[in-house]
Amino acid sequence: MKKIKQTISLIIAVTLIMVACPDVTSAADLEIRKNLSVVVDGVSKGSIMALDLNYDNNVYISLRGLAYTLRETNSAFTPFVKESGIEISTGLDYYEDPHTWDAEELSERSKLKLARNDISVNGVERRYYSLLGSLGESGMDAFMSPVHIAMILNTDIEINNGEIVVNTGEPFSVSDADLENSGYLQGVNSLVIGDGTTGEVYFNFDEDEVLPIASTTKLMTYLVMMDAVSDGKISLNDTVILSSEAQRLSEGIDGVIAMTAGTEVPLKDLINGMLLASSNECALAIAEHIAGSESAFVDMMNEKADELGLIDAKFYNCNGLPVYENQLLPAKMQNRMSAKEMFTLTSEILNKYPQITDITSVKIMSLPVFERDIKNTNAILYNLDEVKGLKTGTTNKSGACLVSCAQVEKGGEIHNLVSVLLGAEGEYDRSTVSEIAMRYAINKINGTVVETEESYNSVPKNPELVVQKLIRNAMK
Figure 1 (cartoon, one colour):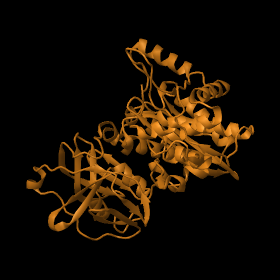
Figure 2: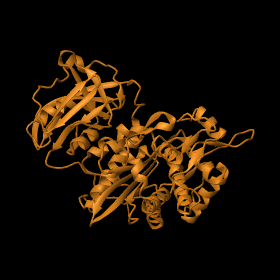
Figure 3: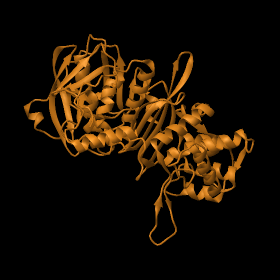
Figure 4: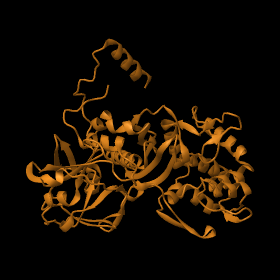
């Protein structure tokens, strides 16, 4: 039984956002308007507009309204909202009196689109979600999740009993108790947070559950490839001749980069395409170059898993796509491992081949041989300067996965902090929970996480449940 906090924190308030969030490009089915009162540093600042999107308490608040209430504080900011996106300047007071819903407007319903609209903070691109809407003569406004605003402003924001409570003297943070409550973790299948440099695990949630890992598979592909380089079997300066199989894969539904059989491509371009654009055909071309065939390379992947002690890991291909068996009732298999094992694999790569972050930290890269630019698929790379990668992955079965790395100096040494998230319900959940996890890890290594004592009644009254809990804890 998880700890139950007396006061609902911001993280728990955003639970329904993550669990119930619609497809980010579709119009909302229901938009419930309301005005929420705002308390800043213990002082009431009136009310601002808010929306419950699709579900009660799935709240998004007016950016302009919040900016007005935070004027002349440490968290002051000025938003400029237009149809093309949002520009935020921190440290600037905003004095434009905000609009609030009147009685007639509160009874109305309209449909806005939740999307990753263009957002810049002090001129730097950030990747968060928002709803943009026109307020008539009052102009455009944006509605955003309180947790996203809190992370942008690095300010403590909570929702307590229907009030927005802002403590401008406190930075955004996640405590151990917040993670123990883990209501928002119901939107993901597994999560592990820790220090990949030392191997210390800070937090885990269903870490032993064996799950499909989608394109995060490509981290193992990278490790096996770099071992081949280290053993002198291949060189990073090699040129690879693309096969007909690579061309066929690129022309299918899972193709990312168009390929033509017989084309000579630098191995480095294939590595960049695999890690940044998550190109399945690039992974296949690399596997064939090293082992002669994908099946032979997959054997090498499984051997490496055994060598690392990843007893639950199983690989069927080099890229993470579903694999069908040739039979009347097709078996749809996918590469799999636990989040704990993925943490081990990621730590091995970062400690053995740290240069991987030279690639995964790049936001956009040109591939002249393919006559195109590729973009990094990791959203939180844009939101935290410490983040240096690593790999996203998505299939229908796996959900949205993300393995993240942040680099932080401690005691004169660079530590690679790792977050492994498997099975988020969508890209919104994946990026939000992963950023929360990475911020927690950064605060943890810096010693700024609030480690609460056992102050809640977490013992079940049912004797059978007590025994079950003791067994679970002993197994952990």
